[in-house]
Length: 122
Image (cartoon, rainbow, N blue to C red; front, side, top):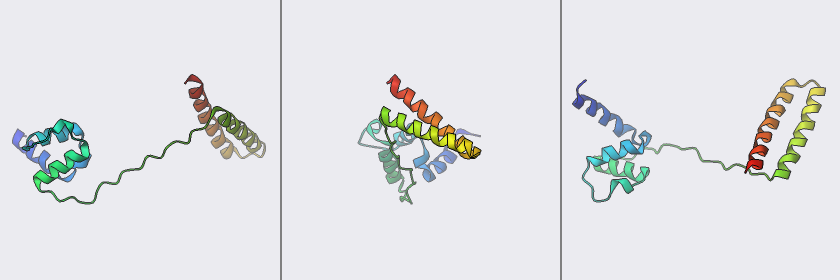
């Protein structure tokens, strides 16, 4: 495949999915466009908008991004209390032969132990 054909295919692909490209790829595309502002100072959203404006692409529905849900932070005493509570619940589940519930509780206990070790190291 010749270089011109490759560039043409790459260009068509870029117009459809600019938001999915990396910032390096966006900067390479933007270098070919005459500009007044420094490209290396632009953020990804600004680069995408700049390229779309230069090419005359109308903005379609924006790509939905997941919102970051902050982690609930517990103090060490709260964490230890939760561990004790889960251990008693697991014991009760084992006694009543609810193996699946006991397994889920064991996993939760394991995760909390890892968190407590990280707290101790910090």
